[in-house]
Image (cartoon, rainbow, N blue to C red; front, side, top):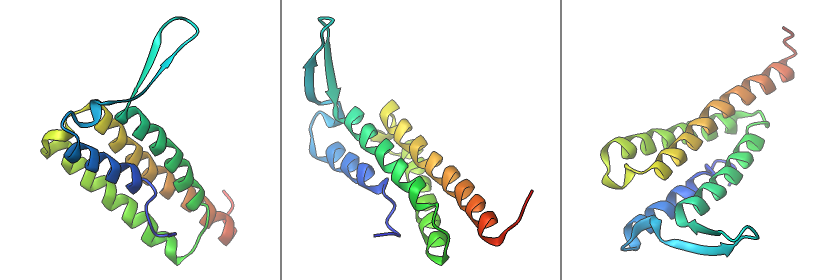
Length: 129
C-alpha cells in the first residue's frame, strides 16, 4: 500500500466515469441549497478534485518517510503524471478543465514529493545549509 500512488484512486474513478456515464463527469452528483438562496451543484469532477486534494495531502505525508521504498513511490507518482499528461494532450476526454486540474495535482505531488524527500534526506544525513 505504501508504494501505491494515492492519486491513482481519483484518476481511476475519473476514467471509470468518463467511460461509464453517457454524460461523462459533468453529471451532477449532489445539489445543495445555500442560505443565500443559491444552489450549489456538485459535479463528479469537483468531487474527484476534492478527493484528489485529500490524496495529495496523504502523498506529502508519505514522502516524509525516507527509505528505499520512497524511490519507488516517487517513480510511480512520476509515471502517473506522465500518463495523465499524455492523456491530456491526446485523449478526447482529457480536453476538460477538471482533467487539467487533476493532472496539475499529480504534478504538484511529484514536485512536493521530491522536495520533501530531499529535505528529509538532508535532515537524516545531517547536512546543514
